[in-house]
Length: 138
Image 1: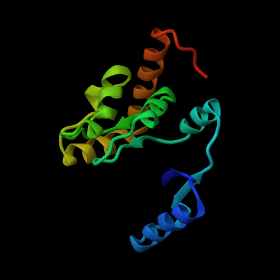
Image 2 (image 1 turned 30 degrees about the vertical axis):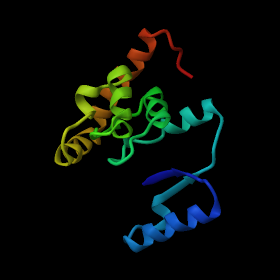
Image 3 (image 1 turned 90 degrees about the vertical axis):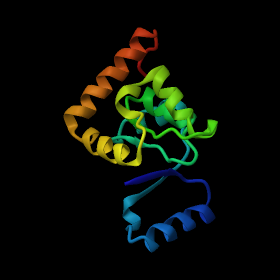
């Protein structure tokens, strides 16, 4: 499933059309409404993992995903905007496991993390790190 924010009808139509052109059914898309922070974090916990894009890394969304206990996969690039998720992972998350150096590693690690035991292990590690930092779970 591809889960994106519902920005407006024009962008939604473009997303649906681009997915259709690539053989992806519209029912595999979630175009979510914006929500308050607590609801957003709670919603994030329903996903299996966050797959960061290569050309412009996630910023706040990566941190929100980590806060929600979601494994974040990233492949840092050479520009600052291509390394922001890696910075969040080194500060808050399991960077040693999910910050990779090649596209091949990205795919291999993402498949490995899809294993339920691996996801549980990473989520426990993330929640433990937040707890140690004095952050209460939402």
